[in-house]
Length: 375
Figure (tube, rainbow, N blue to C red):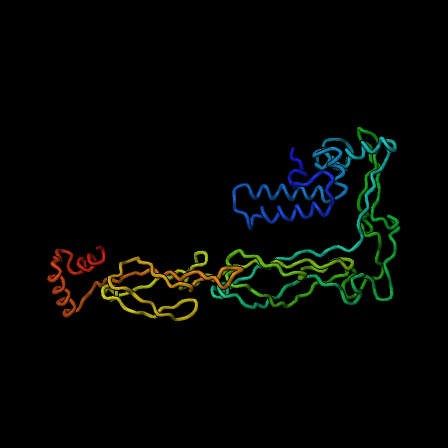
């Protein structure tokens, strides 16, 4: 079985802050959005599992005492009258019984302090040029805000929640359970107060006793230059409001870029196609073409061949995080060969064919023109 301390790279007596620093360092390194190497995602899951177990004093104590078996769940199925007790609960209750008798109860404390609000996700579509150059974008986000009528208490003005009589304010109720190992006490969330330890008799009219209410908020967010499909932006403290004066969660904006009729993107380069006539290809010319920066003059060298790629430097996408550095605009040239010619054009081209010593043969001038661009 894996050793969670080894996975995080910490000693067994590491404190909570040391483990948090180790977890953050490894999570940044192996996060699937950052690390695309094979096995990185599985490694990231192992790191999350290790931190989940070791960051909580209760589960860490079980792991230190019994190893993986102490933190596994669901292994007690099949025994009579276990209810919803997991294997870890039975295992700990069984061994803790030696200290205080087989009827000893496992005691846990449900935190009723401030609770951080949930993070939210918003998918946002951008036009091609918005993704290239960034800018400000106004969004509307529905989220939970602390009720201003009761300031998050959930009770009507002038009243306060009372202590729950079912659990005496502990937020927990105990139930005796008989098992093959003896009699144990199962601790569960109080159904009357839902673990809060308090009951609101006169609920706030503004939020119905929830302490929070759904609101739609307008936000202006900054899109950095160079974003692409799947780029994730974090907007701090714009998620759901926390419970009991807890801090709000964060808003994560996932960006999706709409396709453009004229341009495509390859990393930080912009791609486009350009059709020119066979005469422009033979003689060369200067043409005005569209770029993400607007019209730019492009030089077509004489004798340009089909599928030649011409480059306009620094007219591509700014590098994300370093907008001074930009990619290039790559133009793929296609050459139009005419299928119909006027008598004057045919006469001139036949003269050109004779000067070059070429024979048109059965295919006519079309084959001759095609031969010019095949070498």
